[in-house]
Length: 108
Image (tube, rainbow, N blue to C red):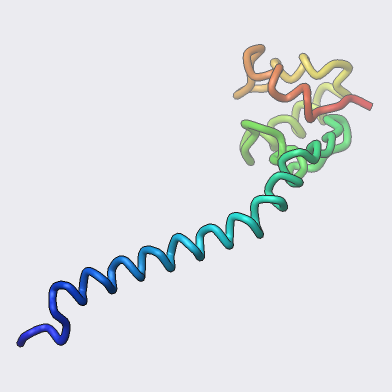
């Protein structure tokens, strides 16, 4: 079955479609980019290691559900954390992972 368009018409349609997509992309970027910038510039809320729930601990970088549960269990067994560096005693965390947590974790 022959195509209802000539090759030249198909090329024109492709160019028009691509131009429309570029215009739509530009519109989205101008509308969405400011919101993304504002979210990126907003500091993450601090998570108190001595009171945080498993869900709150999961918000920390590199902390998943298993490690979050281990932190809560460590806190139950050993008491309050006195320094963020004490997280290194929790299985799944090491002294190398502590610096990235310090910006978002607090001890109160």
